[in-house]
Amino acid sequence: MRVLHRYLGFFLAGIMAVYALSGMVLIYRKTDFLKQEKRVEVQLAANLSEREVGKELKIKDFKVERNEGGTLYFKGGQYTAATGEAVQVKKELPYVLGKMTHLHKATTNDPLYYLNLFFGAALFFFVISSFWMFRPTTEVFKKGMYWTIGGIVLTLVLLFV
Image 1: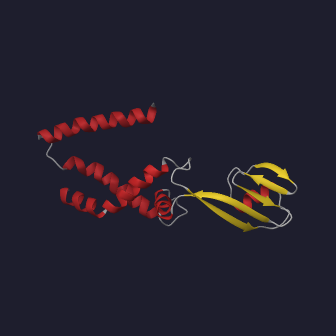
Image 2 (image 1 turned 90 degrees about the vertical axis):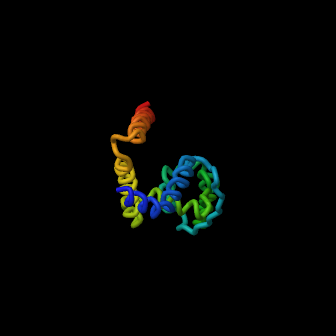
Image 3 (image 1 turned 120 degrees about the horizontal axis):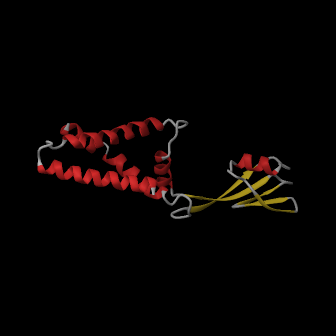
């Protein structure tokens, strides 16, 4: 068990670092922390409705703030109905951090989700196999059990408080 735990740990060291960093970055996903502005111009069909503009630009909860002279103004951009031109200012993470957070958030629609399942199973293996690192009669194991209980209590407090 120790050998498997050790070599799987070495094998997954890189991906664990990626998940650790991207997890910390994802805490700030609702803010502009580390994000860079990117101006995007898109040619849409002319004279689209408000709903159609939001759908074409793939903006969740699309809301028009104001409509002046055939130009729809929305958060982060505008759409000119006469020409169909839409201009958006998007805020995105730098390339590498964006790729890392995409990996972290992979869903079943993404082929990377198999990697996430494997990684989750490997982390669960680390949890279980750590209890076989020392004999139950040793002092180290007994102290480890106190730390385990403390960690479980902390987890329950974070979940339910």
